Amino acid sequence: MVVAVLMPEVVALGEPLVQFNAVTDGPLRHVTYFEKHATGTEANVCVALVRLDVSCGLITRLGADEFGLFIYNWLRGEGVDVSHVKFDPERPTGIYFVQRNYPIPGVSDVLYYRRGSAASALGPDDVDPDYVSGARVFHTTGITMAISDTARSAAFKCLEVARSKGVTTSFDVNYRRKLWANVDDAINVLSKALNFADIVFLDEDEANLLLGISAIDDVFRELRSKFGINRAVLKLGLKGSVAYWEGRIVKVDAFRVPVKDPIGAGDAYAGVFLASILRGHDVEKAMRRASAAAAMVVMVRGDEENLPREGDLRRFLEGYGRQVDLR
Ligand code: KDG
Image (cartoon, rainbow, N blue to C red; front, side):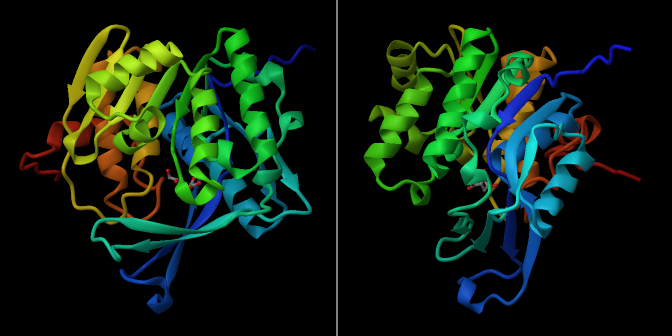
């Protein structure tokens, strides 16, 4: 009997993490209660995709520990393909803590405990080229490029395989200062990654870091001329987002909502944007849906809880700013 193995439409590579989010605001030394959440940028993107019925698989390593099982059960429960998730008996699952609204209101700070984690031992041997080449899109981020040399090599292997097999590559710059030994390393590696990217997500600070500019037209021009990138989304926070998409520039406003914790907004944006493009929405509609999802996730602690299914995404878009009676 021949068993057909269904390949996910999207394959991602990166480190899931357990997040301990401060229940109360202020410096962590005074926080007593933390709430446990399943997170990690590429894992969040996978969950955003599967909630919108786009199949996704994650290549990663988890510790063979309670937190590894917590993440594994989360991914599996959501319907993410876990056939390329390995358990590492030697290394722990990475964790981090979130401090909210201190010292800057509306901004969260993170404290990582992930050095030597299971996912930091990811390497090229963890990448099955057939798995990557069977997808329509491969997605990773600058965080995976930063966590270790071996994880970076795994990410470049995926990007190379994807590129050589005609799989669209999606790259979120996701610069995290605390994960890099120095800024020059970050600039070198992230710039190298841009050479392999078909779709890029970045914000103004990241544009400044990598291109030395943040004016919208200049950013898109430089991405095109230096890296050959024809599909890029520049996220502008409360000012919305703007995309350069195959010759067109499209701008979409942000949705203003009460913010509990801004972490995870970028992943919601990337995941819902990719899902929407893959399901045939035009770029403007994909951006509106992505902005809505980003707004939804920042209304709660944790990155993934408010990632919407199709019905709730539509309800948000139809109801935003209106007096709606849900009875
Ligand atoms: O984008 C949100 C992520 O930053 C968060 O889930 C933690 O993946 C994470 C990281 O590595 O910082």
